[in-house]
Length: 121
Image (cartoon, rainbow, N blue to C red):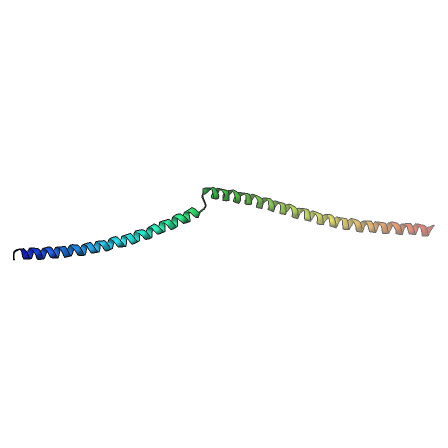
């Protein structure tokens, strides 16, 4: 009988330890699942990073952007120059029309004067 309480306590202790072992095993399984999820996420992120452009692409993009700015500036300057030339062409057309009318008027006056001179003779 003296050993019965000791045996009972030992059985209780074993059961308590078994419960703790089961609980810890479940925690380990949960952590293992979480760890596998994290590893999958890390692998996915590595794949995403592998597809990202590197610094050389960023440098190339910067060069392209600078070239685009320069070409845009050149195009604006050329457009302004074109507008200036178009305005100048319009001025020349107006001047040609004016000179043509003036020439026509001068010819008309000249021929009328010639006609008058012939009539006076």
